[in-house]
Amino acid sequence: MQLNNKTPNTKIKGMIKETEHNLNEALLQEEIWWSQRAETRWLKYGDNNTKFFHFKANQRRKKNFIHSITDTNGKEWQEENHIHDIFTDYFHNIFSTSNLVDVQNSLEVVSNRVPQIMKEDLSADFTAEEVKVAMRSMKGTSSPGPDGLPALFYQTYWHIIGSDVTQLALQILNKGSDPTHVNNTYTSLIPKINKPILPSDFKPISLCNVILKIITKVIANRVKKVLPFVITDYQIAFLSNRLTTDNILVAFEAFNKIYKTTNTRKGLVGIKLDMAKAYDRIEWSFLHKTLLTMGFPPNLVDTIMRCVTTVSFSILINGQPINSFNPQRGLRQGDPLSLYLFIICVEVLSGLLTKGLADGKFQGVLIAPSAAPPPPPPYSLLMIVYYFVDLIQRKLGF
Image 1 (cartoon, rainbow, N blue to C red):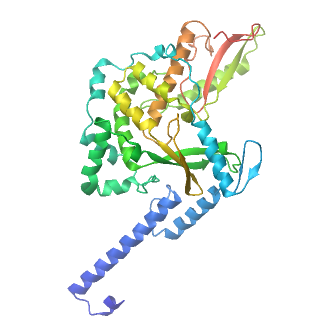
Image 2: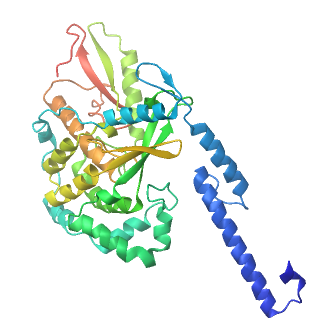
Image 3: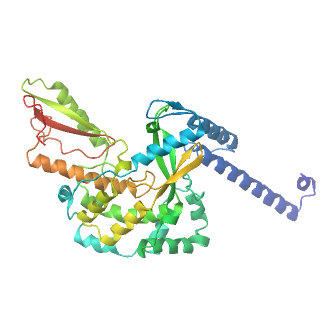
């Protein structure tokens, strides 16, 4: 106000513009902060929306607040310490390894998938340019991990911290350094239903440190180049130039065939394989053997497994991290590399189904006389497997 009341000259006009610029910058930073808190992505432009974002953040916090939880015995608990213990026990059990049987024979269906010409590129040392590309490709305002910093911080101040971050990343990627100190992870609980009452009603999403995400993003950028060679056309989800909607069309036609089948001697049965918690139940030893059997270079496999097996989880309950624990299996949802590793593991199942079909252990659904039976099912949120069975035997020939 004092500046505006003075006689306008060049100096005062400059001070006014500088003050207004600083004020707008401060208001913009406040708006960005509340935008991140509100997790509202659809409202991108407009005037100062601080009040709106503040309301959305509080509304979201109230909606996701866990007031009570029901244990395995059906008893409801409202005390904070009991809620913490129930969630800790639940996820500790999920991420605890089971007695894995020998799967080497099963892995033969995916052996030597990686082309020899690509192994040299996969095993080469990672470069500083790859680290920079991975950092630049990350979403800047994603929820931060335990470090409290979003990727936007690294992208903005890369000219200052870039050399140190790159050196650390390359030490882990190329020199075999232990990533444990950057591999602690917050597990955020996202309700899957409107009124969750059980721990299983929540979806765990991993919030990783940005440095760890940069490292796994660098690996993922290399791995995805070879996926079209190691993943058959039967898997069409999350791969470039493939459409998940093709699964829906095949499933619709197959179920329509099942519904219209009137043959009294033979019929069709559909079996739905529940993929719930599939990410969390991937055995690390199985993942390790699968990568090696497919033909991925041992040095790359070792780097991947270090990033996977050195993780520690701290579950976020009502915004606060609770007891930290070390899992024994599972992949993190939210890690750039996890999706590709999961697709690779599911390829073993697809390969076994393909082999079973070729060996005549089951037949596909013949949708039309001139149509070929649908191939073994690819990965989707739920996998649907169709078997052609003789109703007299009432059993599968697997």
